[in-house]
Image 1 (cartoon, rainbow, N blue to C red):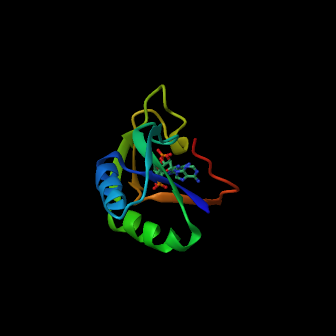
Image 2 (cartoon, rainbow, N blue to C red; image 1 turned 60 degrees about the vertical axis):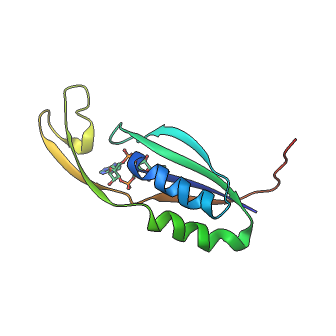
Length: 109
Ligand code: 2BA
């Protein structure tokens, strides 16, 4: 068994969840925050049997878009990529960042 942790854009989260649910996959949605942009994103937990991995990755990929996002360095956030205050940085976010881990056991009571 595997656990997929998928970080997706908030705007893609519902589409990804709907597509997974319609194929009978259970999903837990966590509200998360990107460490770099300090903006909200969504982390999905999906427990699956090994043979389902490819299908689940395809569903996530098909429903996750890449986006350009601009961030302005402020006095408070001037750590950003070594930017000086007031400078703007454009980054490409996503589609999805996915981690796949082995699961020793899953128990439901
Ligand atoms: P954030 O950390 O807010 O990062 C948003 C985007 O900013 C990243 O997009 C990347 O294009 C850029 N970025 C991140 N760190 C950077 C740095 N040190 N210098 C320059 N640019 C940087 P993605 O790579 O698509 O990541 C989207 C979100 O996925 C991340 O949001 C974070 O929440 C998560 N993520 C990505 N890689 C991760 C990792 N290795 N471990 C844990 N979470 C990760």
